[in-house]
Structure formats: structure tokens, C-alpha cells
Length: 225
Image 1 (spheres, helix red, strand yellow):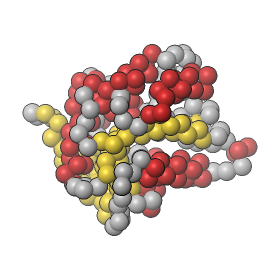
Image 2 (cartoon, helix red, strand yellow):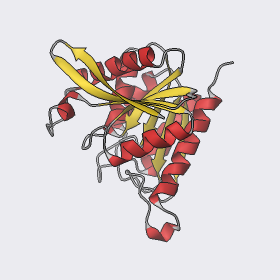
Image 3 (spheres, helix red, strand yellow):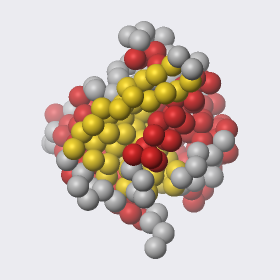
């Protein structure tokens, strides 16, 4: 496994850093956007990148501009979308010839799907959401799902049954409405951070392994030979 730091130009005067993790025999690459409150080097992001590398999936993690500057307020949707697009272009060049997927954790996944819905990103075969933030905690709603119906590539939703930002009663009807393009993978007892309680009888690492196993299998299922 090889890790390389990369600089990505988003727009004039706007540059962000990225980390490319490359297994020796990569079969796919996931452009992996971070959540709203933690950057690309957060332990969760590190664990996902390392776990996917073990499963022959490369990753390109990147910072959103606000995180690059150390700010707390997230970027405007337009700037976030532009950053996702720049990261996808970078991954396409860096991992030339490797099948390309995009998505991310929570906020990062939602910014990726919004970008895809507005204008499909070249080369992206599917989207992956690690905890799609369907609604704020304690305020169940499906409003944030409206743009998903404009996405025309397969989507994988990996989420916990205790996710307070994607209550099952709200999430399941959305997934049914998306039809064949949506695949749901529920991690039993996991919360929005994919942490599980001791009573579940397994560790957080085991819960994440289940999620990454499913993710890897899903990318293979959409292979076009």
C-alpha cells in the first residue's frame, strides 16, 4: 500500500490537499469526501482508506476548502461541489484505467451526490454513502433526498440502524423510491459514526469491517466485463 500527498486546484486561489492510497493491485478507486466536523485525516477516514486498500480499492481523500483553512463553517454548496469535481478529475488522472466511484462520509457524501445530480461527473460509475445525512438529529425529514432522484448511476447507502441522522422510518421509503439504482446496507446497532454498543457483542472495528466488505462486493457487482 502506497500513500501519496497531492495538491488539488479547485479554482483560482483555491487549493486543497489530498491523500491517495494505492494498493498494489487496485481494482477500483473511491473518491472519499470527509464529514462536516472532521477532515480527511480523521481516524475514521484513515481506517476506511486502509480497510479498502486491503480489499483492493484505492482511495483519494481530500479536504474541503473550509477544512483546509481550519474553519468550522462549511463551504457554500457551489464551492463544495466544485471541490468534489476537482477531486474526481484528480483521481481519474492519478488512477488512470481504474474503475471510479465517488462518495463519502455524511456531509461529504451529500455534497458528492448533489454535484452528481446537477451534472454527472465523467467516469464515475457509482456513488457510495457512509452514513447519508438524511435529516438533522431529532428532526426527521426526507427533504435532503430530493436531489437523489436526479442521480442516474447506482448508489450504495451504508448506514447504521441507530443512525439519528437517517432514521429507518425515513430512510427506507426513500430507498424504495429510488428503485433499482439504490442498494441499502444496514449495519445492525451502528450509529452515524458506525460505533456499536457493547451489548451488540462486537467491536466498532468489526462493524466497520462489515461495512467495507459490503462496499467492496457492491463495486464488484457493478463491474461491466
